[in-house]
Each structure stands twice: as C-alpha cells, then as structure tokens.
Image (cartoon, chains in turn blue, green):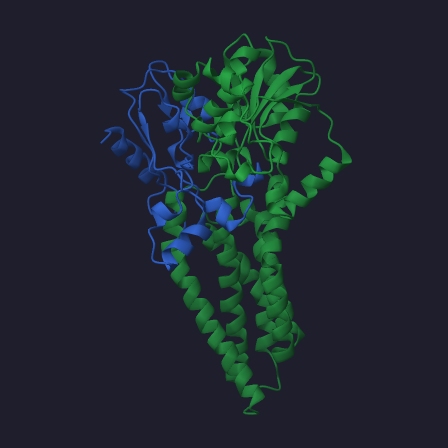
Length: 128
Length: 356
C-alpha cells in the first residue's frame, strides 16, 4: 500500500474528527508521490482541484473533494494514483442491495457492464 | 493503412435492409463519410434540448457518430472529440462559432460526455476506433485531438497515444470556455473546475420530477378520498420538496450528508401539516398525536430518500460517501416511514370504523 494513505487519513481526521453528518470526508483515493513523474495530467483532469502542481511532484492538495471519478488514475502514466472509481448513484446501489447483489459490482459505472446511470434513466452527472 | 482500406471498401451490408443479418462490425467498417455541421442552434435544436431536459424520449437525443466538418477545416485544423448526445454536440459546435475544425463524435448511446466517460462508452476503445474508422490520420497532418476534460474518467491518454499515435489534449470542462482556451491551449484553474451553481441544479428539476409525478398523483388522489385534501397536499408538498426545493436549496441546507439535509428540509415542510393534523378539536388527544406523528415521520423520510437519490445527479459526491450514507440513513428512513404510516393508517381506520 501507499505510504501516503496514512498521511491522507490523518489529514482528514483533523479536518473532521467525528465525521458526523459527513459521509464524504474519506475516499478511496491513494497517491504515491514517489512514483510521480510530474507530468501534471492529474491536475488537468481533476474537476475538483484535488491535485495541485508541485516542484518535484504533484501535490495532493484537497483529497476530501475527491468524487472518485477515476480520471486521475486512468490518466496517470506511471500508476502513482489509485482510486475505486464509480458514480455515486444511490438509486442503483440501493436497488442492488435490495436484490441481494454486490453494491460495488452492480453499480460500477466505470466497468464495461456498468449501467448505473442508464438504468436509473437519470441525466445524472450534473446533466453535462 | 488498414483503416483506409476498410474505409474505402465499405461494408456492403451497412446500407442494406439486411444489415442486422450481416456479420460485419458496422462501427469499424462503415464508410468514412464526413458530415458537415455548423455552429447555429436552430429553434428545432432548442426544442430538442427542452425535451431532453424533461426526459422526453430519453433515447432519441442523438447525433450520428463519426467525423464532422465545422466551417472550412484544413489538414492543420484542430480535432475535437464529442459525445453523440445532442446537448453535448450542440454545446461544442455552438462554442466553436467562427472556427474551422473537425469534430469526432463518439457513439455514447445518446449519453453526455461525463456520464458516458463514467460508464466507459466515452472511452479509450471507442475513441481509438473512431480515429481509425474515420481515417483521421489521412485527413489531418497533425496528431493531436482535443478531448473534453470530463471525458477523462473514460479515456486514458497514454493508451490512446500507444494505439492511435494521437496525443490527447484535455480541453476545458465547459465548451463555452473553448474560444478562450484555444488562444493558448492552456486552461485556467477555473476552466478545470466543475461547479454546481443554481442554474445547473434547477435545470435538473424537470427530469427529477417527471420520474415521480405519476405515482405522486395516484397516491395524492387516493389520500384525498381517504383522508381529505390536506393529506393529498402533504403528498404533493413532500414530492415537490424532494425533487424541486431540495436541488434548489442544496448548498444552503446545513450538514454535508444529503440524507440529513433531506431530513431537515422534510422536517420544515412537515411542520404545518403536523400542526393541522395535530390540532383537530373534534378528535381525541391520541388521534391528534397520531396525525402529527404521521406528518413528522413520513414527510421527512420521503424528502430524505429523494435527497439521497439526488447524489447521482450531483457533480461532487463520491461512491464511498454515498455508500456510507445508504448504510447510515436508509434504515432510519425506513423505520420512520413505516412507523408514520402505521400511525396514519391506524388513524384512518379508526375514523372509517367510527371509533373516533
């Protein structure tokens, strides 16, 4: 595992010690600055400025804003970033849970079989 | 080379009526026809956008995938990738008014760029396929393609470079920033950020509401007959609060979690109904309590559930967080809805039987 994971979680813990009424303070994002070659692609693709440009390598500037879209990991040429990507679609996840299926595989919009947004027939994703 | 060949010797089945029986892969072998488009948004386009926003004929807001000529492009002109959803394609072509460019439309099954990228249809495979089937390398002399930033969850630039020799450039989030972006090919931090401003939230209300409008009318009608017009109004209020008021007020309601925001909003909406149901001088105390409890339990549960489902339409909620919310709050919502309904049904049955 990446050593920065620990740092990331500590940082989050300080920001919101209880996590009370905030389910979004922790994410599955993991970043290993040692692998980073400073290509800056992650800073270009992230829609929430989670990564910032740095001198030696990209900086994990705002991890709590991560929405796990997976753009950074997908476009990192050296696999310095890991994230369990997927659309946070409650509709499909609840449906999967009620049908006794795995919430993760069933609602994985990132995979080939993903059909989260399609099944719920929502415009989703801010309608962009 | 192979691409040029397949493009020229177009699959003979693709245009015939027996297309379904033909074994060829239409996406790869269809002729590399170049269509022409312009930057004008016609009244018909606007009508189509309006229909799309209301979820009318969800599947029909599509453009034909493939390569398009915008203006009078040369071999030096830039290439832009887009989705075959009319709202996406029209946003791009209208933002490029005055430019000569190529637009490569990917087949995303009529889904917008970001959602399609999340699902993988606006993806590396499809982009590489479209680059090859359109014969793009023979049409432009450069090897660059500008992809919208929100396509990045589906498209991997190192992979595209390896497989197609085209280098991807991530354009801004919003097509309307393109003319500014194209001056330097550098996006400002603001161009890279996704926001969720009031208008972007309001525009989602129709499609959210259309989903629940029919069940709402049925339930309201039934309750009108059984429990009177105020009960019917309570149903309509709960649904409107969940689908319209909630998106509008999203950023102003306290707490981070959507469920707790929904419970708070639902609680506020429930108060007047609780007062009406709970202060009927003709009924005994327990019946007033049951009436108030029904409003105070069921309405917040309904609004909170709608609120939680709105996470799928927002621009910032993570899967990890939504999952956490589901486990934290859905059981509570279920208990509230059941207890509130039992209280309401008990009250209704008692009145029908003449107990009170």
